[in-house]
Length: 272
Image (cartoon, rainbow, N blue to C red; front, side, top):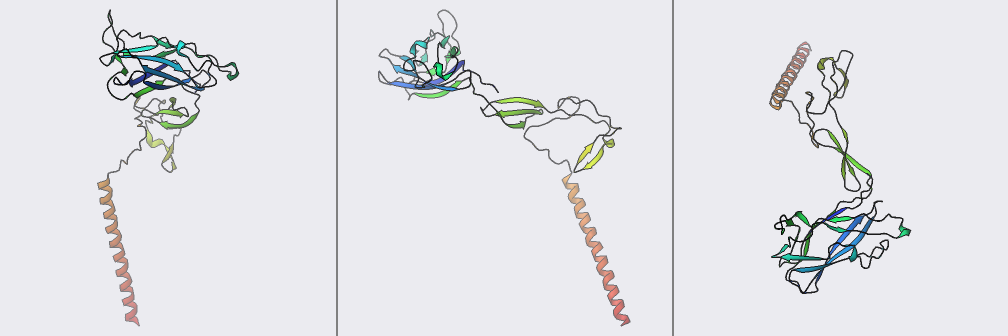
């Protein structure tokens, strides 16, 4: 799988409303470039003297990032304001991190714009009201509940598994999964025409009427359930009954042989 550069980030977190002015909380961000390389950035929120306000700064200690000591100018939003613990509905939903550049010696193309998804549900109306954000400000310790980005490095195929419906799912070294194939089933309308090859394996013959392959559960071809092993279709009660019958028959036969042997020995003894 080729690399996918980061184009959006999602942050879910609570900033402590009881924190003292000047308190800083850091969000560690990993950004994937267009060549699949990862770069670390630090997004910091610092409690302002104004109630409910946190100032934002961006920096990086990655030597391949130009101007990493202070990248705050790359942020389209430099402060967050909360009202009764919720993000102010007037906060711009179109927050971006733009203009990130890498050193020429790294050979990495400049980063495209990265959208910061502040809102799960964007406030509506004029003035805007409502809305649901992943950021809150309650009197609890500052903590991160979710921090994700949509970029991914290069991935090579690590394993293949069969999913329900016969899908062949490839798992790659970058953690992603991708459909790499589809198992098909064929219906044989006259199964008695199959040629047995041993080990429960059969092959079609010139007399076999085999329908074209189709997806599982279509065309009467049955279904495939992923990560499962088909159970036996044998009637266990009947098999145990037959086993007991065979055992009794064997015991009866052995008694007959024992009796004949004893009669033979007795006959030989009479002669002597």
